[in-house]
Image 1 (tube, rainbow over the protein chains, first blue to last red):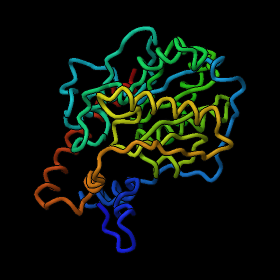
Image 2: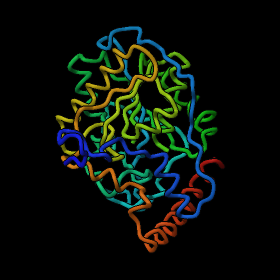
Image 3: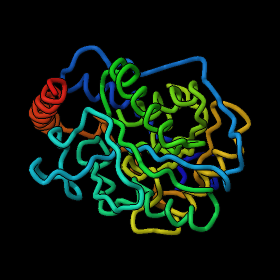
Image 4: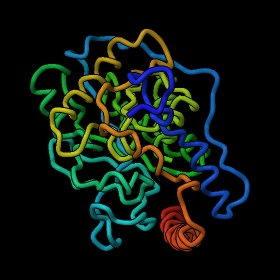
Length: 180
Length: 130
């Protein structure tokens, strides 16, 4: 496994979290798309402590997955990137019901994963179990879909306030955000 | 953009009084934005909630996220899921890695990308007009 000179028990040099910002920048530059994207970057990070124990807290769920739309082309396992399946407005769904959410509108790793098990990106069924077990107080009545917009301004000025309003309406004590 | 969107949302919610935890697979994007609490899984993009068809790994991954939510001592708390994707780390060499692509493949991908971007633009324009 290891290619390191100082110890067979050490990890391979490339066994590190993938440097996505670098990879994506050089990828699009090589494809011929000018200036590299400037990723969101802040020095200050806010922090709100949890007020109650989890077992008494109402938890909200936020996802970037998209509801399946039969008229929008291939969104199945392993489908190529499907821009038509994207959404640009926050949506919400009933957490008591089952949902068919897909990720063909996202640049997931198509070479190494096939998107055949939605539980690996949308843990709603498991969260219902966890709520039943008492590990969390309860699951909020709705989950919310966050649009993945290239424009940070649109995310910050349009989508974030909308998510906040909906989570406040749901009276959540904390939110779990799952990035596909 | 998923990891960036979710990071911006976590920051925004937190500034407005809602504690958050992010589950994701792109460590550099989330930490570059800066979020309060982050459970990082070193899996291919698309598996933030555990390995596919592996309920045990999904259970562990969610439980870790909940523990990060309840015990993080301060902002920028990242915990790495101890599960690994495969015995070999070689999958990490492939994603958007131009060093691994031929010239023909780069041309093919450019054409495909232009096509899909056009479709996404049409959806966005329609959505903006609503």
